[in-house]
Image (cartoon, rainbow, N blue to C red):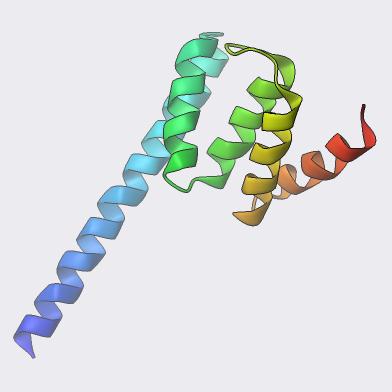
Length: 103
């Protein structure tokens, strides 16, 4: 019983640490974006997105759609919006739909 409780506590601690890392990468991206350091924003949002942060995927999609810090790639932006939508980001869903209406 003690072993099971210990395993659960360790699991909760690991998940808490990982989720704060995801949030940190996302926040780093938002800060870099605010400071117009687009390359740093791309790196941070990629890290957040790769870690499962839907908002990070959405923000990275915006950068690819506009070509800020990366070569403009609307196909990649569309995929990132879809990934954000699948992760529960409502803005990712709306932008994903809008990409189909725009040439």
